[in-house]
Length: 167
Image 1 (cartoon, rainbow, N blue to C red):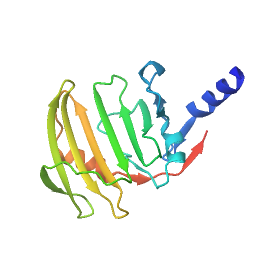
Image 2: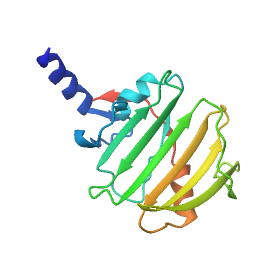
Image 3: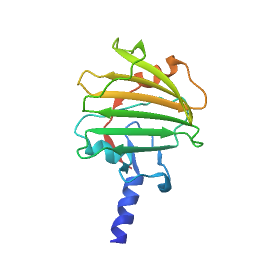
Image 4: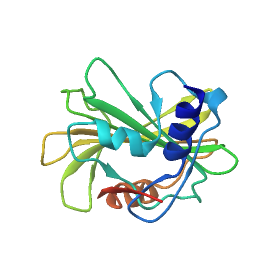
């Protein structure tokens, strides 16, 4: 059984997204029970997943979390080597309320809601919208300092549908 778990762990850790980029998974002590690698999560959700290909930092770590009972919601998280910044992308089939805030225009002309708030980690800036397939998206950037709205929109406009392969 231990051998099986070790082999499974090696396969999971070698997975990557089709952009050809490979990110390390956050160290295990930071995991919650529902936490997976992005590769595992994309395989389990019943919808096409769009993941950012642009970040305002070099991504070193990533993870995904599924929310039971059915995998209708997934959150992808990305960090640099020093996790003082974080990008999270929440995708859900469930109808969720979009954060009220300033209306912004996405690169495809669609309207979205922009909001920001302070938390114990610093600023949280969010863009929320529904895509053409009816999926709810919320992209948030968390850091000590805010970034320009245009930078957050640049992350959003880099979303691409990903197919997966293993190295």
